[in-house]
Amino acid sequence: MEMTDLTKLAYSLSKEYHSGQTDKGGNDYFNGHILSVFNLVGGNSSIPPELGIVALLHDIVEDTDIKIEQIRKLFGDSVADAVHLLTHVGNSKKIDMSYLSEIKQNPLAKEVKIADLTHNSDASRLPNILLADEIRLEKYKKSLEYLK
Image (cartoon, rainbow, N blue to C red):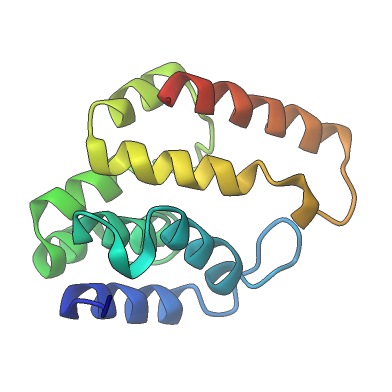
C-alpha cells in the first residue's frame, strides 16, 4: 500500500527532527526505533492510517522542539491527542499507572505504546545488558501486560 500524503509528511518530519539521535544501543533513532514502531503497527498498511502517523510521531514532541500545537495543526485532533498522551512531560521518563491508564483509553496511543514497548523490550539491540537495563526491561514487560 502506498503512503498517504499525511503519512509522507509525518515520515519526513520525523526523519528530519530525529536526525542525529541514537537509541540506548547507539543505533540511529529514526531508522532503528521509529521505523520499527511504525512497522509493528502495520506501516503503510496501518488501519486507520492515523495509527501509522502516530507511530512516526510518537516521540517527536518529547525529543525535539516540535510542539503539540504544530502536530494538531498539521495532522488533526486524533493524531495530536494520541501523540500528546504518549509524550512524557518535562524530565519525566517514568512509566506509571496513571500514564498507562490514560494511554489505554485512546486506541491510537494504546497500539503505538504497545509497539513502542515491544521494540524497547528487545534486549538484542543492546550491546551489554546491565542491571539498569534488566530493571527497565522488567518494567516494559509489566507495562505491556497491563496494556494488552
